[in-house]
Image (tube, rainbow, N blue to C red; front, side, top):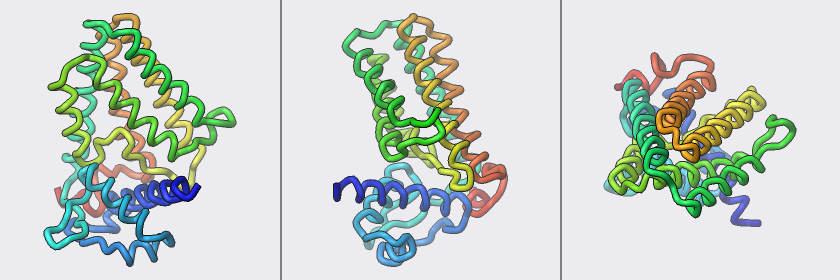
Length: 240
């Protein structure tokens, strides 16, 4: 139970810090101080430390030589290009998986993840277990990248996911409209199913098209959550 609470606090810190970075409230080059952030977010230092490590893996922070983390400098084009590149690579992986064929064992794994992702939603999709969804979503995308059997594509996808906001689970929750946010995740889950169905049906072009559109939706949701076009102006975005 204690670990679950800690994970929830860490995820909440990840969401809060992502939004502060994207909006420019936390500017590029700023050094994040663990104690101050823990106090500001009203959580212990451990989940704050975990959150900063995760954001470093996503390419939003970098480790300072003297310890701690510094906000990386990136701009609008960096975010757009990162998300687009992930879509291209995931689309290619999905197409190759459909064309080459996937073993039943691998399909069992991804379909099990789809069922578990479905279980994250309740009340007609208006509520979502976000910590669980975030974890399973990352697992799904990892397994998706493996289906084509290409070590090269899988390795490059792992590298791309470390670019700013290219991680499949780099969500920004809209606290003012949680229902809309939950429904956007539900729509993303339907795209997950379409990709796997296309792969199972050996429809390469369809699988690639849906996978690329799935990544583009991440950019649209980013814009919608902030209630403006974050790829045009605001804070860190100007620095690129």
